[in-house]
Image (cartoon, rainbow, N blue to C red; front, side):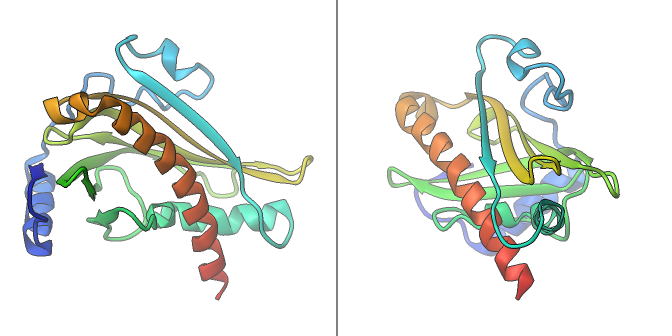
Length: 205
């Protein structure tokens, strides 16, 4: 959804409810292609997609296992979307398969409401990793899937956050502003890592 004026909250909420109720289709064919972490994403999707993978160490007090537990809770609660320059809509609890959410951002004077649906959640209790991904729906400005993961490495006393995605512009405006879109995607990856750490601290009270 592209608008010259910001859609009001009621319009956004109604739109997301309609998407959830109608089981709106994904806007790409390779649904779930980010799930297999043993194979690089670029080997699983057509070459037309941009593939981005970024990893960040998650710091904070306590052991790696303690940091991982806090980060796991924050990730599943979407704390990594506490990015100052975007709005996040549709969250009704921790991430679950089928959940419909959307980001709202103003770029170059134009408002973009970009809806997605959670494709899968892989968060086994007591595990050393947690991942989930969402995929774009039909009126998203781009097509593709984005995965968010946390990994615990007890031996190295490290917790790492990974954001990985494949995407391609679907509408003429993001394609026209392609260099800007790519810059925003890179900036977004860094911002989510920072927001995740903020969410961990806030959870500690």
